[in-house]
Length: 161
Image (cartoon, rainbow, N blue to C red; front, top):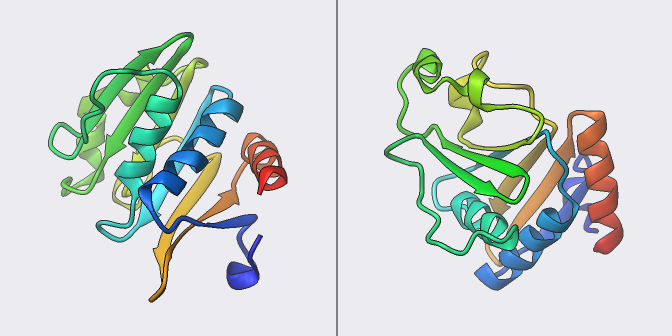
Protein backbone atom coordinates (compact mmCIF):
# COMPACT_ATOMS: atom_id res chain seq x y z
CA UNK A 1 0.00 0.00 0.00
CA UNK A 2 1.18 3.49 -0.79
CA UNK A 3 0.59 6.51 1.43
CA UNK A 4 0.20 8.77 -1.63
CA UNK A 5 -3.58 8.92 -1.12
CA UNK A 6 -3.93 8.48 2.62
CA UNK A 7 -7.73 8.71 2.52
CA UNK A 8 -8.03 5.71 0.16
CA UNK A 9 -8.55 2.29 1.68
CA UNK A 10 -5.91 1.04 -0.74
CA UNK A 11 -3.84 2.33 -3.62
CA UNK A 12 -2.29 0.18 -6.33
CA UNK A 13 0.16 1.27 -9.01
CA UNK A 14 -0.95 -0.01 -12.44
CA UNK A 15 1.81 0.98 -14.87
CA UNK A 16 0.43 -1.11 -17.76
CA UNK A 17 -2.61 -3.04 -18.97
CA UNK A 18 -1.22 -6.36 -17.68
CA UNK A 19 -1.13 -4.96 -14.14
CA UNK A 20 -4.69 -3.66 -14.53
CA UNK A 21 -5.73 -7.16 -15.64
CA UNK A 22 -4.11 -8.71 -12.54
CA UNK A 23 -6.01 -6.32 -10.27
CA UNK A 24 -9.26 -6.95 -12.18
CA UNK A 25 -8.70 -10.71 -11.74
CA UNK A 26 -8.38 -10.22 -7.98
CA UNK A 27 -11.71 -8.41 -8.01
CA UNK A 28 -13.28 -11.20 -10.06
CA UNK A 29 -12.14 -13.84 -7.54
CA UNK A 30 -13.51 -11.91 -4.57
CA UNK A 31 -16.63 -10.10 -5.82
CA UNK A 32 -20.02 -11.09 -4.47
CA UNK A 33 -23.31 -9.84 -5.85
CA UNK A 34 -25.06 -7.56 -5.41
CA UNK A 35 -22.32 -4.97 -5.76
CA UNK A 36 -22.09 -1.53 -7.33
CA UNK A 37 -18.68 -0.21 -8.38
CA UNK A 38 -18.22 3.38 -9.49
CA UNK A 39 -15.24 3.84 -11.81
CA UNK A 40 -14.02 7.44 -11.66
CA UNK A 41 -11.22 9.15 -13.52
CA UNK A 42 -10.33 11.25 -16.52
CA UNK A 43 -10.88 10.20 -20.11
CA UNK A 44 -8.33 7.50 -20.98
CA UNK A 45 -7.50 6.75 -17.34
CA UNK A 46 -8.18 3.01 -17.67
CA UNK A 47 -11.78 2.58 -16.54
CA UNK A 48 -12.93 0.60 -19.58
CA UNK A 49 -9.68 -1.39 -19.61
CA UNK A 50 -10.37 -2.43 -16.02
CA UNK A 51 -14.03 -3.28 -16.77
CA UNK A 52 -13.05 -5.43 -19.77
CA UNK A 53 -10.37 -7.28 -17.80
CA UNK A 54 -12.79 -7.82 -14.90
CA UNK A 55 -15.52 -9.24 -17.17
CA UNK A 56 -13.02 -11.53 -18.91
CA UNK A 57 -11.61 -12.67 -15.55
CA UNK A 58 -15.11 -13.73 -14.54
CA UNK A 59 -15.10 -16.09 -17.52
CA UNK A 60 -16.69 -14.15 -20.36
CA UNK A 61 -14.81 -15.20 -23.49
CA UNK A 62 -16.29 -13.03 -26.24
CA UNK A 63 -15.41 -9.43 -27.03
CA UNK A 64 -16.37 -6.95 -24.29
CA UNK A 65 -17.79 -3.89 -25.98
CA UNK A 66 -17.43 -0.41 -24.55
CA UNK A 67 -20.90 0.86 -23.63
CA UNK A 68 -20.00 4.41 -24.66
CA UNK A 69 -22.65 4.66 -27.38
CA UNK A 70 -25.35 2.29 -26.13
CA UNK A 71 -24.80 3.34 -22.48
CA UNK A 72 -25.36 -0.20 -21.14
CA UNK A 73 -23.90 -3.62 -21.92
CA UNK A 74 -25.11 -6.72 -20.07
CA UNK A 75 -23.16 -9.96 -19.56
CA UNK A 76 -24.48 -13.18 -18.03
CA UNK A 77 -21.65 -15.14 -16.51
CA UNK A 78 -22.44 -18.20 -14.41
CA UNK A 79 -24.83 -16.95 -11.70
CA UNK A 80 -23.86 -13.29 -12.12
CA UNK A 81 -25.24 -10.56 -14.31
CA UNK A 82 -22.71 -7.84 -15.05
CA UNK A 83 -24.22 -4.48 -15.96
CA UNK A 84 -21.62 -2.14 -17.47
CA UNK A 85 -22.71 1.48 -17.81
CA UNK A 86 -20.75 4.29 -19.41
CA UNK A 87 -22.42 7.64 -18.80
CA UNK A 88 -19.87 9.85 -20.56
CA UNK A 89 -22.26 10.78 -23.36
CA UNK A 90 -25.44 11.47 -21.39
CA UNK A 91 -26.68 15.03 -21.04
CA UNK A 92 -29.25 14.54 -18.29
CA UNK A 93 -29.31 11.91 -15.50
CA UNK A 94 -32.99 11.30 -16.24
CA UNK A 95 -31.88 9.52 -19.43
CA UNK A 96 -31.04 6.58 -17.15
CA UNK A 97 -34.74 6.04 -16.46
CA UNK A 98 -35.13 4.76 -20.04
CA UNK A 99 -32.59 1.98 -19.40
CA UNK A 100 -34.83 0.28 -16.79
CA UNK A 101 -31.78 -0.10 -14.56
CA UNK A 102 -33.98 -0.56 -11.50
CA UNK A 103 -35.53 -3.61 -13.17
CA UNK A 104 -32.20 -5.06 -14.31
CA UNK A 105 -30.23 -4.63 -11.08
CA UNK A 106 -31.00 -7.45 -8.65
CA UNK A 107 -29.36 -9.73 -6.05
CA UNK A 108 -27.25 -11.45 -8.74
CA UNK A 109 -25.94 -8.24 -10.32
CA UNK A 110 -22.63 -6.47 -10.33
CA UNK A 111 -22.99 -2.93 -11.66
CA UNK A 112 -19.93 -1.16 -13.09
CA UNK A 113 -20.51 2.55 -13.73
CA UNK A 114 -18.08 4.74 -15.64
CA UNK A 115 -18.64 8.49 -15.20
CA UNK A 116 -21.08 7.97 -12.28
CA UNK A 117 -21.18 11.71 -11.49
CA UNK A 118 -23.34 12.11 -14.60
CA UNK A 119 -26.02 9.83 -13.13
CA UNK A 120 -26.52 11.56 -9.79
CA UNK A 121 -29.73 10.47 -8.01
CA UNK A 122 -30.48 7.89 -10.71
CA UNK A 123 -28.02 5.16 -9.72
CA UNK A 124 -27.83 2.73 -6.82
CA UNK A 125 -25.45 3.87 -4.10
CA UNK A 126 -21.92 2.57 -4.67
CA UNK A 127 -20.42 -0.15 -2.52
CA UNK A 128 -16.98 0.76 -3.74
CA UNK A 129 -15.52 3.69 -5.66
CA UNK A 130 -12.44 3.03 -7.76
CA UNK A 131 -10.53 6.16 -8.68
CA UNK A 132 -8.20 6.00 -11.67
CA UNK A 133 -5.41 8.59 -11.57
CA UNK A 134 -1.86 9.18 -12.69
CA UNK A 135 1.21 11.21 -12.03
CA UNK A 136 4.13 11.85 -14.36
CA UNK A 137 5.49 8.32 -13.89
CA UNK A 138 2.61 5.85 -13.61
CA UNK A 139 -1.11 5.24 -13.20
CA UNK A 140 -2.91 4.30 -10.00
CA UNK A 141 -6.19 2.78 -8.94
CA UNK A 142 -7.39 3.53 -5.44
CA UNK A 143 -10.36 2.04 -3.63
CA UNK A 144 -12.84 3.74 -1.32
CA UNK A 145 -15.41 1.63 0.52
CA UNK A 146 -18.90 3.13 0.73
CA UNK A 147 -20.80 0.19 2.29
CA UNK A 148 -20.21 -2.84 4.47
CA UNK A 149 -19.88 -5.02 1.36
CA UNK A 150 -17.39 -2.55 -0.13
CA UNK A 151 -15.40 -2.47 3.09
CA UNK A 152 -15.21 -6.29 3.15
CA UNK A 153 -14.08 -6.41 -0.47
CA UNK A 154 -11.48 -3.70 0.13
CA UNK A 155 -10.15 -5.52 3.18
CA UNK A 156 -9.75 -8.74 1.18
CA UNK A 157 -8.05 -6.89 -1.69
CA UNK A 158 -5.67 -4.94 0.52
CA UNK A 159 -4.47 -8.21 2.08
CA UNK A 160 -3.30 -9.32 -1.37
CA UNK A 161 -1.20 -6.21 -2.10
